[in-house]
Each structure stands twice: as C-alpha cells, then as structure tokens.
Image 1 (cartoon, one colour):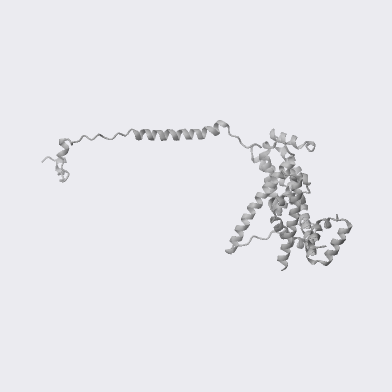
Image 2 (spheres, rainbow over the protein chains, first blue to last red; image 1 turned 45 degrees about the horizontal axis):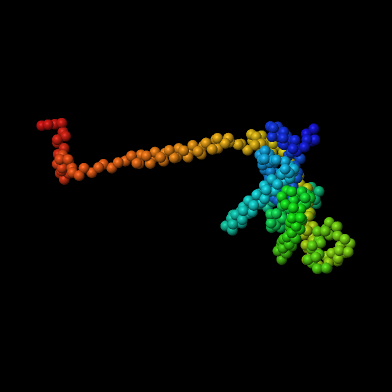
Length: 197
Length: 143
C-alpha cells in the first residue's frame, strides 16, 4: 500500500506528523545514496555513517523541500555535499596524520576493501592492491569532475540526471566526465609508474 | 596509431563499442606497446574495483538506526523562534545597556566641585599638625 504512494505524498504525510513514513523514503533511496557515499569514501563503515547523515539532514530540511526538482535529485545533492565535506575533513586529517607520523606517531591501521563473496582470493588481493591507487587517483580529481564521475560510474546516472543534481548543463557534464576520465587515466598511470620504478 | 589516440579509445575498447577498423588498430597497438597495455590493465582493474564497491550492500539495520535517530528529534522542522522573541531579546539588552550608560553619565554630571572660599576658618588655622596631641585628654581618668 505504502509502496504505491508517490514521494511527494510521503513527504506531505511526514510533514503532517507521520514520522514513520520517512522509513519508506529511506528504503527507496538508501541503496543509491550508499553507492554515492562509497564512491567518495571507499570504506563501507564510513559510507554507512555518511548515508545515515544524509537521511538525517534530509529529514531536518524536509520542510524546505519545495518540489521544484524530484526528491531523488534533491537527496542526491545532499549526499554529494555531505560526502564532499567528509572528503575535505578527511584530507585535512590526513595532512595532520602525516605531520604526526613525522614525529613518530603510530600510523593508522590499513583498511582493506570489503569484496563480495563471489570474488576469488587472488582477485581480492589484486583488487586490494589497486584500490588505494584508484582511491588516490579519484581524490586527485577536482571536486566537480569527481562528483560527475562518481554519479556516472557508481550510480549509472544519465548525463541529464547528473546535470540536474549538479545544477549545470548536459554538455558541461559530458565535458566534466571526459576530463575526469583523462585525468584518472593519467593519475593511474603515474601511480603505476611510481610503484613499479 | 600513436599512444595518445590509443589511450583515448581504451574505454570504448573495454566496453566493446569501437567500430571494427579502430578496434583492430587498438588491438594491434596494444600488442606492440607495453605502456598502453599497462594503462589498459589499470583501467580494467579500476573498473573491477568500482564494480566491487558497487556490489556492496549497506548495513541492513541502517534504516532502523536512522529512524531511531529521528525518533530522538522532535519535528522535521527547524525550530523557528517567534519574531518577537528573536527581536525582543537583543532589543531589551540594548535598551538596558543604554539605560545603564545614561545613568552613569547622569551620576557623573551631578558632581559639582566645592567652590573655593578663599580663606580658612579660624578654628582650622589653630590646628597644629606638627605636634602630637597628648592622648591623655581622651582618657576617662581625669586625675
């Protein structure tokens, strides 16, 4: 029954005091938002926390949702902003950690990628080796290129949907994705070269 | 085919969307060029990492966690204080501050210096500060 309700109808009922209806919105959008968070953070536990943060922020701002765009576009925007903020704060912490390590502080434990069960051990090893390269290559991209490539690769969104989320034109998104791919290729090659030399 | 052109087409080659003539050129170049082969391998691995991350599911209890956090919140609205309360508090503070300052100025302006009389009274001129008066005069014992 609830499944048949539109997003706007659910939002109206949540705002009228039926807080439990928000669970339906969480159920509908949780997988997509989690994938976006994974695309930015690459750690499952952090992505879980970030997904939770996105939905809490969405709930608190629900009164300001005017319906000018679809709910999915609106919540994707929140997810991108929350993720970028997290990435920025992580980068700052990373710099501090490196500074600490100069003075002999303990290094953070290595976090391994959680791979689905259907991958064989050899694949897991190879993927874990390359995960960090990919992560650093993605981190090296400018924020708008990174957002475009994450939305495109992790959530398979069309250029039109990405354009609406990023509040830009389809042409601009196409250009961002192309430039992101070129930069990603360069970054990956540079990492490969650095690690094989 | 040069490396730059080949690398530009690697993504399409991986997806199998190249026309036959270009696909053959890319494949031939990949057989000869180790650098481009390395780049191609890296792209394939990057795609596999992305695919592996996409396959992960979020915590099954996440929705419950979110709803529990929401239960702790009161309403899906940012609490709006009434205009009167938002304006009255700082206004009252400013008014009180102005009153206190005004009273300070008023009290300060009430001071009037004692006019100079020009000469001392006779009693004052008889006081001799240079000598110490005997304390005996303050004693109850009059003997």
